[in-house]
Length: 430
Ligand code: NAD
Image (cartoon, rainbow, N blue to C red; front, side):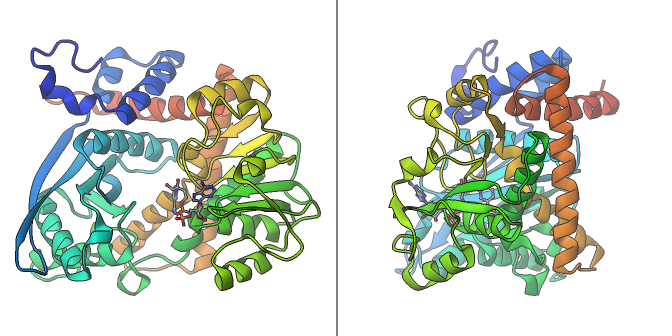
């Protein structure tokens, strides 16, 4: 374990955050299943590079505030580093290390030629003006500029950052490279400056592709199946829409205001119109109001939790009726709940694959930027289907071979790819 031989535990405090420790626990279990080379496992338990920067910003009242930012480059065996940038007041180095590790395993299991990284700034972005946010982003970009680039490390949006933030990042980096446009340095950009078509709905569409395949391997099919979706934001609303378009009966959806239910199926395009007008799903005509807790326990074939982490835990795991659970959100089913549900015969398609649509289309954006040749939306959707289903199938094969659950199988697949590549590349300098 990290830290055991270190004379000064403080030197490795960033390796002891709860997120990273959880990831390492899953890592250790999966590494044991595939009998991962112990030297490779030892290397994979550590981030390669952790950069901490001070970011001075002139605020609107002319005072100067200094923020702390990070970029953690966890592993680049499979390709350039890739991972988002988070602006949140809880960001610290330990959290960024955990997120960077998760990106490494996610990119690997998805079969992308990319390493894993993550960045962040400890700041509450809602308290900044547009000018302050731009100043913060530009100085952060400049501070980490030597370590990023289209062939080195390609950031993307995460919590608290958006396409505009990425546009400022791309512009700052390009100005510092002599003013030549470098769209490939960052993804999640607006389409006008090299963003990809299809990015907006990519995660929701990926969830539905995975759901379709999960139903199929469980001898069911999307058309006519009963589906419940928790969360009606970017991921959940598109997942509900694409499931509806494929003939599923979407019997329940919910958002922060509560849920709505109709056993014959909700008309999702009309629910989307209702949300545009009123802001929430509640009050939709011809539906019955239910709570978010009830939504999770609805009698259905597939449940798509697309809102928050930790929604299904030891308290409600036994009451989940859906046979298939497709994790649209990050970590909606806890590790303990997974164990209970797998024992009850549930099939859980884990978040690293199910919500991989976003990072897959980010990868496509980078490829299109490098080629300077852009695909139409139908092309992007089709390529997304091919990549995400290939990832699902390889994890399903691991599950069958090793008789393990899909979550452990996903980590085992990720480690196995990294292990093979690291053994081929060898240890530098010897
Ligand atoms: P979003 O903010 O667009 O939507 C979140 C939705 O969840 C909203 O409808 C909100 O009302 C609802 N919600 C909030 N609290 C709730 C509660 N207690 N019960 C039920 N619903 C609640 O966010 P998003 O982009 O759709 O992301 C959702 C999840 O998916 C997050 O875990 C995110 O990290 C993950 N994710 C998103 C993407 C992406 O591309 N957007 C990619 C990978 C993972």
